[in-house]
Length: 101
Image (cartoon, rainbow, N blue to C red; front, side, top):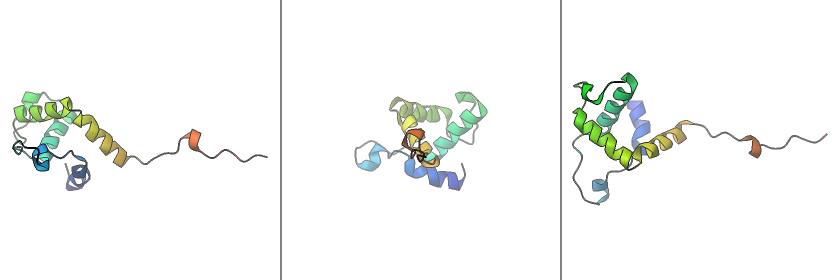
């Protein structure tokens, strides 16, 4: 993930509970490393256990992904990112009617 991609994605990520004072312990790996690992997995179509050594251990990446998936955070992040990247379009029903002749 480039620095520009990370700058766009970081504010869209959900804030961990321990940072909001809800308890728990800090995560061992940063979200950028985890997102990079998941992107590598999706992009290359590899299996979890074939995760390159450049990333956190596959078990931690899988647990991170599974936790996000179970709490619908993957969909929430995807929707936020999509909303930021797409320009709003006017639908045909909202367009001004053609002038009368």
